[in-house]
Image 1: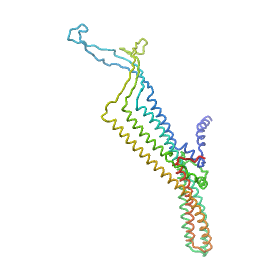
Image 2: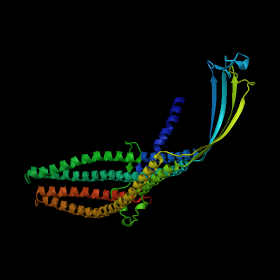
Image 3: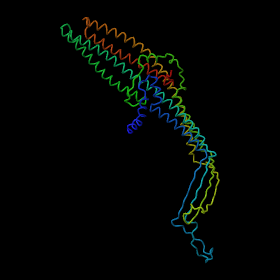
Image 4: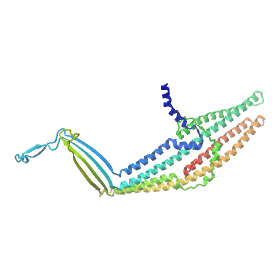
Length: 447
């Protein structure tokens, strides 16, 4: 009984965690979930935390640094020195062998170091701040891309689901038509070609149905990956394709501000330019003097035997204060060449920034055009579908009344099936093109 209770206690948190994972998502819920649990987004957030730590690491390098050192020495064989023997009353010209110091010694010192002036340190502080901004902009870019990927994946799942439903309805209608046509042929009132035409159409619909069914599985798996879930996690979607399409038709977005400098891609390019500016400053700072100070103090003990832990062991204290001034004087043109190289890279970054701005303006214009076309195409495909349904219904009536041929019916059916798929794709295009435009403009759908 106790073992069973222990097993329940161990497994309860696991069951509790698995129950917290949602299984039903609207599009907005899917986006919000992915922004928190998508693996790429999580790593982008970690990059920001790493940048914050690096910023403090850089800052701390210019603050007081304290270190301690303990040194123990034991001469296995002490060095012998020779001095004139006459120092000890010997004969001139002779030398006496002596050993200085004790066999063992121990010292313990603490050192305090402090930068007073270092131009490269000041540049490093600015660079750490810029690096944090780069990480934050990268996170924003990642979130925008994750959001767009979730919208695309969510739409693909809905497209597959809607396609399956339509194909299944088409299959049911075809099977009914084929059954009735077969009976008419068996009774000698129709041609065998009519049966064969319907069999060809039915075979094509069945094949397409199987293909879309496989695509649906892949679409769900792709959505799970974008959400940050296990690839085989079972989820259901609460939105439908047509409702989402209507919600994503926003003509006001076509009039949105097209300022390229407000986009995240421009800001990332501007970060690169700022980085190159700092590299120029860094190379220039290397020609400036550096000033550092240090203070150390400690104790040293000497003994023939290891008596350093005894209470009566004598320790001799010492301390030292010093200042180091390092003045660069001549580098054979090395520093000048490095500075010129950094300036060239800065000029390249400035050119790239202008190029990026032009490309972004073009991307915005293109995305708006694609989005506007998607809206217009959706309305067009919607009307085409209604016409194709009417044409197919008329041809089906004419066929069973013996007025039109099976070939004409098959043409009408093929035209209907094409119109159905084009209408579904037009709805998906509205959703995806709006997401693409919002991504470029740095907008969201939090409503």
